[in-house]
Structures are given as C-alpha cells and as structure tokens.
Image (tube, rainbow, N blue to C red; front, side, top):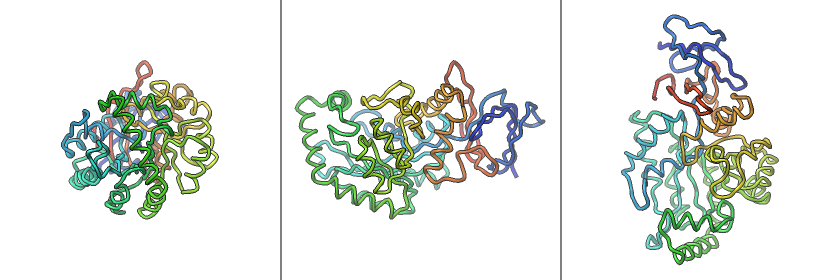
Length: 380
C-alpha cells in the first residue's frame, strides 16, 4: 500500500475551497479533512491550491507537434511524446487527442493529407508501454466535406479508445469561417497562398461540400453510435444548426459561433464548450462570439485549451476570480467535462476518485503549477 498526504492546502472540491488535508492511498483519494495542521510525513503545500487534474476534450496541440511549421512533418512518435509532456506540465491529466479524419484523394490539390490512423497507433502503442504521463483518448474530428472520410472513420474500431466524434464543416462563408476575409489572411499567412490560390481553394471546398456534406454527416452520426462515442457538433451558428445537431444525438456543442446558437444549445441540454484562448485574449480570433459574453449569460459549461494547453488552467482561474468562486471556474475544466465524456472516476476531489491532481499558486492573476499527479504518481 502506498500512501501520500497533502496538508496545508486550499483543496478545490466540486462546490467549494477548503483549507485542509487530503490522503491518497494506492492512487485513489481516501479522505479529505479541514484544518491547517501539517501531520508528520505529509507534504506541506504551503497554502497552494490543489485541484482535480484537468480534462481536455478538444485540443489541436498534437497537430502543432506533428507539423511545427507549414510543410514540415515531425516524426509521429516524437510528436506524441512531446505533446504528452506539454499536457502534463499544463496540469492536463486526461486528454482527448483531436485527430482529423477525412483527406483528399488528389494530393496535387494541396488538400488534407491522411494521418490519423498512424498517429493513433503511436499513441496506443506508447500507452501500452506505459511511456505516456497522462491518460489519452481519441477524438476523431470528422471533416465532412472530404473524399476519404468514411474510409478513414472505419479504420477505427471500438477498441481504439475513440471517446468523442465531432462533426466538422469548414466550408468558407459559414460557421467558423463566416468572415472569409479572416480566413483569407490566415491562409496567406500560414500556408503561403496568393489571391488566386485562395479563390481556387474556396471554390474547391464549396464543390466538396455539395458532393459530400449530407451523406458524410449521416455516415459519421451512425459511426459514432457504432463505436459508442460521444457525438459533438462544431461551430454551430444558427438555432437551425443546433436543432439539426440535437436531432442527430449531439450532446456536446463545441465553439458555437453566436449567442443565438449557444442559447439554442442550452435549450436542447447540450454541453457548451468554448475556447480557453478566447477567454485569455478577450475574444475569438475568428471574429465569433466572445466566450466571456457566453459565460456572463450562463452559456459556458466547459473550457477547451484548443491550441494552447497552458490556457486551460489560466482561463479557469480567470473565470473563478471574476465570479469570486474558484470552484465554479475549476469545474469547467474538471467535473463538467468529466460528465460530458461519461467519466465517473475522475474530475472531482472526493473519496474513491482517482488521484489526478494539480497543485498551483496564483501570482498576479496567473496560475503557477508546481506539481501534477496522475493516479497518485507525480508526472510533472
């Protein structure tokens, strides 16, 4: 039996923050007690916070490691390891790695290239070898308007830890990319397109949408049911978008782009996910609704680090301070995403839950992580 005691800590439970002591036995939370004393042999947390380990449902961070610069490919195994260590250092102890499925058959068109199955193989193999520090699950981002989507989806079986499947349509002029000028600037800056290249790209994407959107959407919904994955929508913009998603069984709404869409998500009982970078930056980089506005109106349930892992705890603490309720801020990155993903063993500091924990202090509004544990073992 292994036992660890944390003392003199601000322990963030689901509903409150208490100053006290927590005992971990064999990787599981055994007891929580209030009081400022430090028993012999306990770790003195010196008044720091201890929160549940963060749960990340949607991160593109692995893609950044796979392609650190445009047209630069990094070895997949090395990318997975680097991504994993970055998450651990950011306090993320459970992650759904977002892998795009759906590519273009004609790669001369500079479209999406296939990569998901090989990347997942590396993740799963490293997990079997116990080489990863945090718990990894697979989030398949289904690009509906691509040639190979259905083929790539069915390369994944129920044994591949596919916990989340999201419906993606990135056709210009709608959803996330309603503002095509912002998309134009992005494509020119990141991918080196000129004006003619951007127009050809837009035309091609619209053609693909007309070919594939409806039938691939239906196939993806059926696939999610087949593997028992949670179904998510992405960038719903109108109440009609949300109604269609709800009818298909979507329970997680990722990044609704308007207040009207978020209000409809709430009416349909969907979990509303917004980007932590949106909170930190004070708005959306795509010109969509600000996460702060949704939070102020009770329309933000879950935060996602999206493309900056360190933003997850930062945004949760920021909201906690603004609401004068740190437990409420931390819930958006722990208990609520646990519920949305169907976990009952993590996401909360309570007896019999996994000892996935993050210790941090707050300095001038910024969280500073000192240590992270997964299943009672220190990983950062």
